[in-house]
Amino acid sequence: MVELCVAEEVTQRFNGLTVNANLEMAAGRDFNDGMVLILHGMMGHNKMELVVASQQILLENDLSSLAINLSLNLDNRHSYFDCNLPQSHLQQNAVRELALWIDWLRQRGVGKIVLMSHSRGANQAMVYAAESLDPEISHVILLAPGADDVKASYEKRYGPIFDANVRRMQERIALGKGNEPVSNIDFWFCPRAEVTPDSFISYYGPESKFRQFHKYLGMIEAPVLVIAGSQDERFPNIPEQIGPMIDNQRLFLAVIENSGHFFRDLNIEEAVEALIEFIGYGG
Image: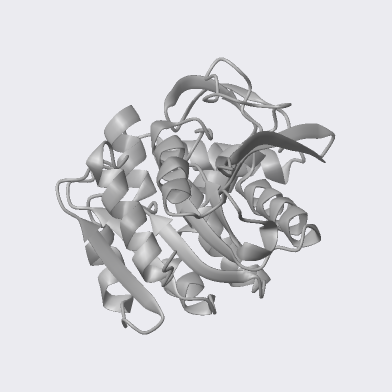
C-alpha cells in the first residue's frame, strides 16, 4: 500500500481571533520525526508561491512542514493584507503567534523544529529564537531578512516625511492614543492608509529590536543559516550587513545566484536544498 502525504488546515485561537496554518505531513512521518515551521514575510500569507513551493520540495524530501498565517489582527486571514483595512497589527504579536504554534507542535510531541522564515518574517523569527531559546528549535533559516535602512526605503517610496511621521505617532502614543487609527499615513506598501500609532512605531520605531541583527543573531543558540538572493531587489545588502558576523560555526550565509527577493522558480529549490543540507537531513 502506498503511504499518502497528509495535508490539512489547522486552526487555533489568538487574542479572540482564529489563526490558521497549513500542515503538510510527509508520508510515514509523525510529529516526533520533526517539523519545518514556515513563516511568511510582511503582509504575506501561506499560499504565496515561495511558501507553497517550499512545502512541496520539503515533502519530496520526506520532511513535514507547518506554514502559518499571522493574523495581522484579522480573523482567519488567508490572503495578502488589504491596504483598505485599518492597520493595527504589531510585530511583537508575530512573536507571540510563533510561540502559540510552537506550543501547538510541542503538545503533539514534536521531535525538533526547523524555523524557516522569509523577509520581515525572518526578523520576527530571529527575535523569537533569540528570546525563547526553545530547546525544540534545532536550526533557524532566515531567507532574505529585512537588512535595510527603513528610513531610506520609506523616503525612496514616499518622500522625506519619515521623521515627521515617527514623531507624530510617538506624540500620540505619549497622549495615550496609541490604539486610535490615524488616516492618510503611508505604511509599507500601503499609501495613505489608516494606521494606529502603536502599529506604526512597532515597525518603524527607532529602537525596534527587529532590526538589531548584531544583538539578536548572537543570542540564538541554534545554528543559523541566512539565505540571500544575489539579485535581491528589496534588500540588496544582506551579505554586507550579515557578512561580518558569519563564523561558519554557528552562523552561516548562503547566496543563491541570480535570485531575487522571492526566490522564484528554480531559486526556491536551491534555497530549500541549502536548508536540507544545512540541517544534515539524509532522508
